[in-house]
Length: 229
Image (tube, rainbow, N blue to C red):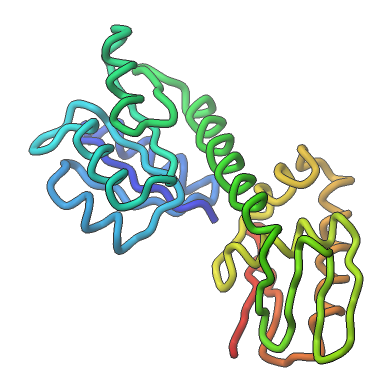
């Protein structure tokens, strides 16, 4: 589940956006001004920040700079009624990854959120592949496509490695099913969805020797890799 920190002072717009995103299985925290954004960011740990530019107390560009000072990687989308080139440039200089102008369609906003999240996670995956990761009593080596327990080595396929990497990046957190399908297959159609089910079943078989490790299905939402050690 993608977590979004949304800061917007226009109450009617905020209500529509928040409810629409929640209906699409996003987890969202909304604030109406810039006063407590940094504290909320540190506590909530969002995957995406969605900041209106014109805000009471602190404007969106200031918030972008503050967030960047504590997290240089989290994607930030600025929302604004301004359309001058200088404003767009200032948005990117303030740490923004994307910029959407009012009025906007919710479908466009959702596409932008998903694209940024996918790029962010893909970048994490590429950096993650050189490491070994402990999963309970197992050692997972994405670079070698190996899952090791004691002296037993299980060779993983390319797709199994990709899927387990995604789950380990967000270990003990929910990974959205659509995000997995879009990241690994590029499409969430029926055929790819059934393929995902097969690979999840395979990974469960590989991990079953450790009772503290489990891949939990959250129906219509996604999966959580539990490491209870």
